[in-house]
Image (cartoon, rainbow, N blue to C red; front, top):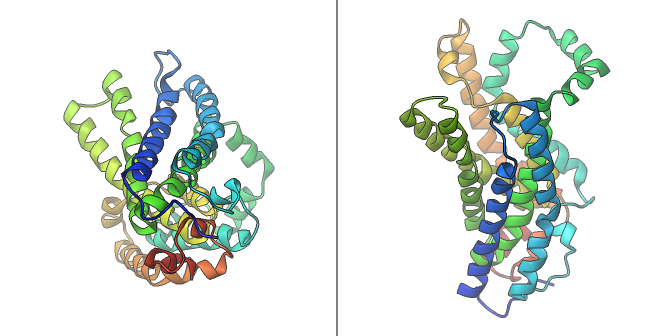
Length: 308
């Protein structure tokens, strides 16, 4: 059964959808500031407090989706958790393929990293399978924030909860580019802390914020695309964690690298392969029944784009 909202989406449906998404985004960011402190955001005490805040907001975020369904009258036979990407069908491919696709995109930075890494492949494997290494990671507040808590909570709030609310209003395509706007705007809160602690000049802070907004919006569109095409949350979370680890490609340092030509070849090769493999590796047929399809009218162009 497809989603039924009594005809074409109107201002009521879209207004409620946008309001719920905006409220959810503000709640997530606002939760970071409920604690009074004079410490920078990377201080372990600040990170621990914010863990508590965002985990509470994230655990309550499905309620926004429930409220949205009640206010809009959307009816669907897809379970709530399934709409949010929590399901077992196709989970193996949803875990492996999106992450592999993202690694292909970052082929250049990965090759550059391998050239600069003091370990060889065998040493890297030994570290990866050493329990002491992972114990150090899970006790490091910065690592936990960047690799676990931030990817999990941000993808849950900004993808798993917001996309099902936006798709019936905008359709799947526009939702992919609308949802990241909330995600990008949410990252502007870093400006407050940088100004507060005078970490740079005002101009450089706002230029950095504009760049971060652009980067996070593009990244958010990518993970939204993965979420809608696969119907799983695990792929966006793993891709988010991987990108947080790699960071923005160090293109300028690549130009000054002794193996510049080789690295640049892999940069271009990675981007080319990424676009060639983007649709085949995210083909919905690989991931089973896509829950968001239950929110679209059967026979519509939007339905055929991801559901058949």
